[in-house]
Length: 290
Image (cartoon, rainbow, N blue to C red; front, side, top):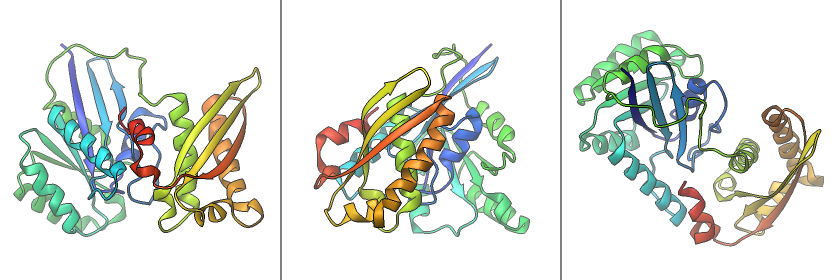
């Protein structure tokens, strides 16, 4: 007997969804940042064991859409909640439950699907705070609450076993070696964007888009050309930095990570260009429907 199920991984921005997915799969497929709205794509992570296959869908952080890009992202979220077998709701236990979190909780109440809560970052709070949080969540009608630390791997095995209680029997739908829908081009773009998120502040991280223009594979190295797109002329010099320092740091840190991915040297060329209102344009928005 085998089990197969699709797990919608949802939570407020910075709840730790991408960290959990990377831990489960034993490799990095989703970028991690302390800034909200990091995940833009519908990212699949397929966890296959002898007797089960779980397809985790790392959805964009639940937020109020202000641009067409964000509307597309939230449409992906609602669509996935309708089709998933189990909803895995991640909550950052290290911060107080605010209005945004409660809005998401009330939204999930209306969905007739098994809902498992992963109470994340318990290694960052006092143990005396964990039980009251669990009791509060039980009163809200969630099926299961499992305290975890995605970064440290605490109770993650228990979380999987809890999810499996609600997963139906079924044949595997993916090859056992298949891990993710993130292809080479998308991975490169996401790694560069991760470094932009790390290095920049204020609105700049949310108004950037990385477009991979060219990838050339050679015997001992890979050559990559990318455009980092911003919305305003004033943002371009910020991203380049004084004497080109900022863009150099982004390039060097991206190259270091991409060397691990490709297993060979990487030559990365980054160019910054301005594209006004790109978050409203179809040619970019279609890339979020994967």
